[in-house]
Structures are given as structure tokens and as C-alpha cells.
Length: 259
Image (cartoon, rainbow, N blue to C red):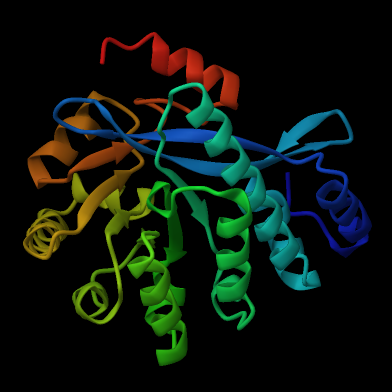
């Protein structure tokens, strides 16, 4: 369906206020052992009891209407609460939360993160912030400084949605990063263009030299998994490995695995 228009602002506001959104979680698996590296939290909106809306259906509305900040706060609170519940059940899952470009430009965000981490009592090392590559590339010094401060406190920082190869090497040296995620769009190009594959292989080698974890997003079949391993990626993410799952299904999936 097309992205929701402005007439749905009130419904989205109520969904946030009434806690009627849900988080699904998609595993990231190490490509060689298929052991779990972490999970990414992905928001879903049960819309008028008819369908489960994906982020692309309503995030543009949130961005346009200023609801992106309360949406992020909701998602962070829910993810931190879920981490705590899992910890009580003996599961330690490293969980990623997505930031938008507008989130990253919000000067109040640093304090929000610190307050929520303190109130939730969550080990900061279990949290990863996934930030769009374009937003991180445009980030100013103040933003990079507070990200570096969060990282010193244990939070991991991931560069998400890498589509192009012109900017990343500079970002790797300039930004406080722990992880680089190759977008499904770029990953799909690798099998079609040997030059792109070579450039990505060189980028992955540079990441490895600096201690960055690399994740291929868009692993949709066994060939994709083999390609991620051949390129030197540390981990893969995609429906072939596991689709996004609600918390109870994720736990069942984890406990059914031999590792």
C-alpha cells in the first residue's frame, strides 16, 4: 500500500500513546557458524485490525509530522524492556534500534538515550544504534561527539543501509563505528557487477583491519549466504536466515537451534 498521508497523523499519535505498535526482531547470523550475532528491532503497526503496516508505510508520515521523536522513544523503551525480560529468562540478546536522519539531528537525543538507559537499567553494551549512512555522512562535529560519548559508555554504533561506495572509507575513519551494514540494494548488485564486488571486498577488508563488524543485509537464498562468506562479511541478515519475528516466536526459534 502507499505510504499513509497526513490525515492519519492522529491515528499514529494514538498508536504511540496507547502502546499499540509492536516490535518484531530479525536475527543477524554469523555467516560461517550461523550462530547469532544480534537482532534488529523493527516496528510494526497493527492498522485498524486489518493489516500489519511496515515502517515504509508510516515512517514518512512520522518524519513529516514531528512524530519521529516520540516514535523513537517508544521503540527504545520497548526494546530496552524486552532486553530486560529476556535477561530475566537467561537470554542475552544484543539488540539494534534504528535512528532516522531527523532523530540524529535532534539535539535532545543524547539526553533522552542516557535517561532511558539509566531508568531501564540495561547494560549499554547490549544496545546498538543503527544510523543511515547518508545521515551519518552529513553529521556535524557535535553529533559525532555525543555518539562517541555513547559508544564510550558501551553502546554500539552501526552504519546502516550502505548503498554507495564513494563515502564509506572516510566515514570509517571519521565516525565512531562498530558495525557496517551493506544494504540489500548494494548486496544484490554484487553478483551482477564484478567491479562492485571487488570494491565491496576491499571495503570489508578495510573494516576488518579497523575492527568493524560487517553485515550483509538481503541474504534471501543459499547463494546469497555463500556470497557474503566469500566477500569476507562477518554476518548476514535476511529472510533466508530468518524473517522478522515477534518476541515469543524469536525465543522459540532460538531454543530450537542446536547452538
